[in-house]
Length: 56
Image 1: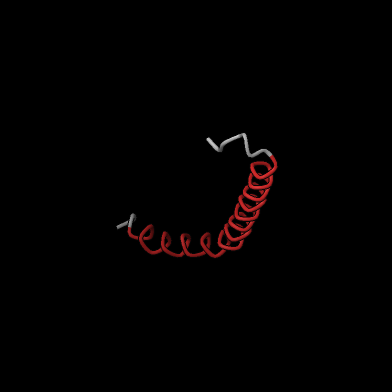
Image 2: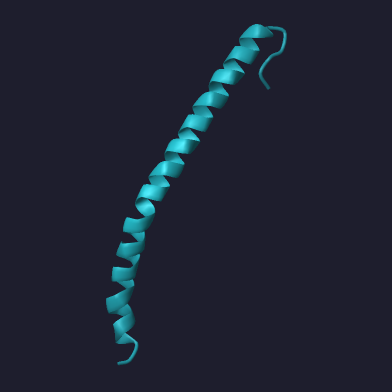
């Protein structure tokens, strides 16, 4: 009987942490996407400047 409160509290904890982490995850996702885009752009400019170097 004393373990019953875990089933009541656990979903609320999950929901509250999810609500807290969602904006952080969105920020991280945005940073990763921008970083990948910047890497792609620099890689493309690098390979276009050096046509003898083939991408791996």
